[in-house]
Image (tube, rainbow over all chains, first blue to last red; front, side):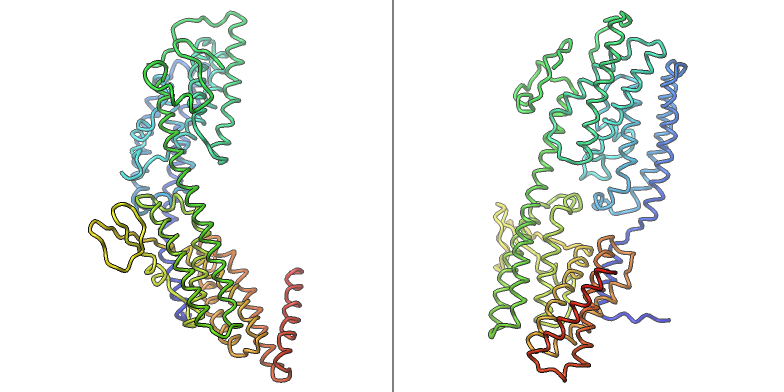
Length: 229
Length: 282
């Protein structure tokens, strides 16, 4: 049966059509990205096992391979909407981009014990840092990803000790403290990023306790300096 | 506070950290975060400015709507309409400031800051348009009046005098979503207008309004749940408003001729009071 659209209905329906970029398509690509992110996480999680420590370089290499897939998938995502409407649909990929930032940061830490820069993350993911240049990494997503990594490192500190590596926790401690000083410079609003940042102090505390446990038992050597390159 | 090897003590006060710039102790990490601090501060400041402008827009638009409700009770309607037009021109100036802030930005990054004001503006301007023309203003017509001339110095003028050398044209686009939400809110005002018109003994307006509201309602029903989430919520209120207006027309039609004009409002009010208590139960 035919639905007769009156003039007003037409005006309203036209409005609606403008709203529709294919959200279904976007969601589909994002699901693919989430899957790849889970695969990368599976590879990297294994460094927490005692046997995993020795295999860190090969794990990182494998993760980097998987990031190639991520690059392709993000390339696909970019085609699903007009680039100047990035923030209109940002919520769809915000979570997965934060996870991918965390994973990139974790890989870079495992490789070099440095904090990955925004530019490095963008390069790993095949995206931009600056909004005007195209699909970019929002600064708050970068920061959120870094904070997720901080939690992962506090866990790694604990498991390093169990695996018999008594030096790594010290280096993690220095790294996390420096990260904390950095975050203290930020004027955050009462938003999800702030809540996540509030968790950082628990990571700091946990790692301090590990370092304390080691030092009172004389297990940790104040060995090579903890300078960042 | 910890002292780490090779570095000075970390400072909690962002200002102090900013002062001690150069070589001595900025690690790359801290230096990077200083940049992040500036970026975040800039963004937050812009957001707050937009929130403030949006509040001004909301207040002035609401006052315009109250003014327009007085049209039926006033001898010189044209005067009221002109005053309303003037107020809305002021609101448009404010929207020009919003456009200025958004120049070069992705508007959706800041959309939440100014959407309440814009919706209120759409409600006001479509209300005025209905009173004058008895039709629904289109999104294009709304956006056509949100065009601004800016001289290079950034001094805002919405001028009809033609562009000065080096002037730019700045536009603000109301999004389809904000348009729909503003129109949905308009229906509430129209429902109030219907009720007060009955009180004034005007028995034509309710029927016109009923027809108009029904068309808007049908349009929204067609969208159903496929539009933005907020639209679905407003559809519920819209149905209630339409119900009240349709019941009013029924009461007028069936019983209007039996009752002296000055008592019509009482009949109507008692029916709507019944409706309201029903809503509480439902």
